[in-house]
Length: 432
Image 1 (spheres, rainbow, N blue to C red):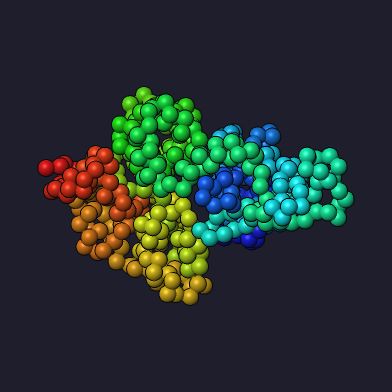
Image 2: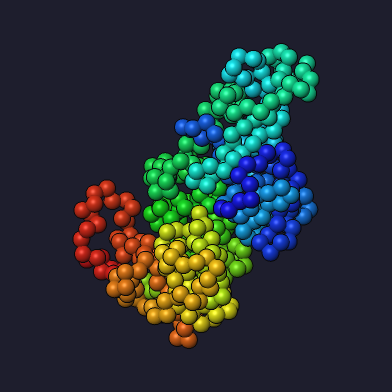
């Protein structure tokens, strides 16, 4: 995420207008959502509470913010209009943390928190780092405050009590401990707990986080979880998934449930999923994502590198930028070629990407079987291969992780011993 500033104060940011990528205002910032960390003091921001038309408050994930500056916050796309609901592991900076009485570690007494600063740190995360506080005359609380001159900014690590009582902090940190787990590890926890607790835990995760975990679960657990979630929540989770992953899950659900969820999804997202469902499960069309990185030949290399650097992209998807004629959404205009990200790094940032593209146009058709996709990727040492129709229009791309998911036995996630999955595998989809 590129930002215009590396620090902001939450109270000062309140009321700031949120703009979409084309510059239209979509709402105003009302609060910052943070999650305490179990092994390091700073809490990290996960998003903003944004007030939109009709005084409705929705959640804007921090990963979908491209710029934070005085007077504006710029998002990378449309807001999810689902009403914001705070989870047990989350705290609101303005709603929960301002006006709290904290104890200063230097022994000078208590102070009231009046504002909180968040800074952009390593791994591109925003963390609470500074508190703007006003000293209290007595250790008891809000009455008897000293004059305005007795305000100061302190490091967040120099106070205690910001996150409430010890019991409150322990509960918050228990939930926050899950945030540090990789999706695959959290998926193992999901498989070990009982179904009721599984639903409760799913309710505490963001849509994006739950989507990542679902991709790590075996089919039976996935189906059970999706059918027991509230339908609107299940549809929201499908909305944030890559279309190919959402299609895999929808295909596993009972037909009536699948159609209901598709009807609740955002129309554009549902259309992509329906398009993928038209292809066989073990074909390039069934494996592909409809959202590879696509640019026009006039696009500067600097813009391509900015696209590649987006945190939410998988390494395989970020490895290649496809160059196509308009339109630039699948199915695109004619695909002219592609550029590997390493090639982008070697060229001047203001050069047009169309001048350096690989014009070999390596691709497979949507009906190509898994074995053909695998052979083409192995032959040309690719981790991302285009899927085009007979007219050369780009339909999507297949990544190596999708190939592996379908080449391995269906129950590979439940196997404890590596030897159990090292037998001969028919890349057409059958085990022998």
